[in-house]
Image (cartoon, rainbow, N blue to C red; front, side):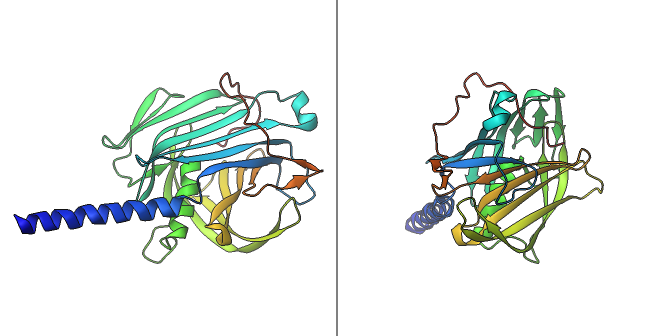
Length: 276
């Protein structure tokens, strides 16, 4: 009995240590961070068309909640009056993020949501009112959870090794795609406050060949591989929308960009073309 008790104690201690390590790895991702929105590729002298917040909450119960919301500013606010909204909810573990629910509100298609049932290996798309099986896939991600999943694996030195797959399954409002992600060489970025950051660009390529859109993002290796720039590209329409995440308070035109979060209780889609 004492041997069994000892083994049980060791297992429980290992679980506690693992849980603490995961929380430690994720704590730098947690918080509410201002974002600037750009139409086209971000450049230092470009003017943002929108601003908002990227929020990541981590709970003691190992639940996570990621939200990205933005609203138009300046001349764009005359035409685009309501906030854009993305949300990802699920759980985290030593394997990273596991999505249970994803929601997006865009001007073109309004509100769409996706429910994921990990035990059944099923996914439901509100846009098609259909369920699909993903039994042959290890894990699936929405764009938000995928970005932080790769950041998380970078931080643990478990990404893009020879024995680790570069392929991830990512879903949008109506389908799942197998996407290959590859890191590019470090790129020097000039932030709006004039500071320089050498970031790792992650490029995506849909494994089946031709694609109508792509996801790219830049990670800051000196800041826990935090995603500081996110790019959604529509390759058919040749349009790009980018989100620049500001982890530190900066000054633009002598005004802080940090403001109250936009009211999204009665949110209505307004702003960007869908990614795929």
